[in-house]
Length: 410
Ligand code: MLT
Image 1 (cartoon, rainbow, N blue to C red):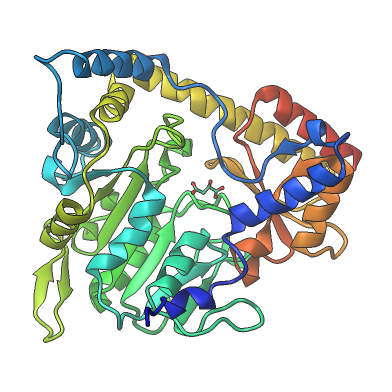
Image 2 (image 1 turned 120 degrees about the horizontal axis):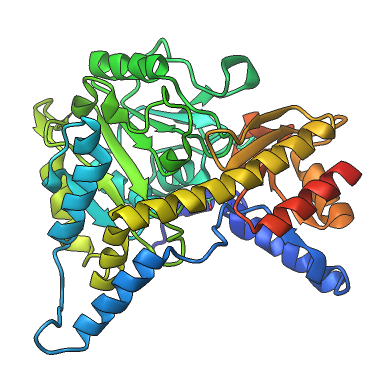
C-alpha cells in the first residue's frame, strides 16, 4: 500500500497566505457590497509594472527565440553565464565582496531555494529558527521530517526558537548552545528589522566556532537605506566559510510573477559527512540543481540581467522609492493611531502592536470587517508574533493613502 509523507500531517492548518486568502474570500462572498472596497496589505506581493528595461530585454529575447539562428533550448541548470556574471559583479565584486560567477545559482524563487536547500543537508541537524519567522523555513523542515509535533502554541519539537522581540530590537541573540543550521533573514520578514554589522559579525563568529551553517535570506536587501547596514552576509569576514545567501528579483525588480532569484553557495563552505569528514556543499548544490531543475527561462534571465543596466538600476530605485514612500505613509498612520510601530524604514514591512489586548487574528478580523483592509496577523509568523500585525507596503500610492486614512479612522 502506498505510504504518504506523515510529516505533512504535522503541519498546522494551512500555509499562512492561502489561509488569509481563504478568509478574505469568505468575507467577500458574504459581503458582496464591501468586496470591491477591500484593500490587500497582507501578502507582500508587488503591484507596480515591471521596469521598462526588463520589458525591452524580454521582448528582444522572445524575438531571439522566434528565429532559427538565435533560438535556444535547454539552458544551463545553474543559470546563464551572462546573468551569473552580472549578479556576481554588481551585487558582490563591485561592492568589494569576493564571490565568483560560478558560486551563483539562478533559480525560480527564494522560497523554493529556502526549501530545496534541505536536499543537501543531513537529517540530524540542530535547527535554529527565529520567532516570528517567514513560515517557509519552519514548514519545509517539518515536511522533511526534521521536527516532532507542534505544541499548543504552534512550536515544533526539535526546533530551537530564537525569540525576536521588541526588547532585542527583533534581532536574535546568539544562543549559548551549539546549533547546526540557523536561518537569518535581514531586512526581516515580517518585522522589518535590520541587523547591524556587529550583530551579523557575532553570528558569523558563532557559526565559525560551532561549524554552524547560516542560511541568510536577503530577499529585501534593496530596501536598506541606512548606509551602515550590510546588504549581504558576505560583507562580514568569515561568512564565505559558514553561510549560504538567498536573493531574489521579486521585491526589487517586481518579479513575483515573472520568477527569478538566486542562491550563493561559496566553494569554501564545508559541512560534515556522516563520518565527520568536512566536504564542500557547492558540488552537492550543483548536482541537486542539475538533477532536479532545468533552469529559469532564457527570456526571464535576460529580463533579470537588464535590471543591472544603468536604466534598470534607476528604474529599480524608482520602484523601491515608491514602496518605501508607502511604508512612510502607513507607518505614520499606525503611529497616529497610537500603536507601537516597528520596521518600515529599511524594509517594506511595518510591524505594529495590536491595540487594547486584541489577538493578532482578532485584529485581522476587525481590520477586514470594519476597515476593509487585509493585514497579516503576527501570530501567523510564530508564537512571538502574537500581539502584532504586519502591514505590507507593496501597493499603489492611492491604496496606501486610503489604508492610512482607514487606520486613522478606526
Ligand atoms: C510575504 O508576504 O511574506 C511574502 O510574500 C512571502 C514571499 O515572498 O514568499
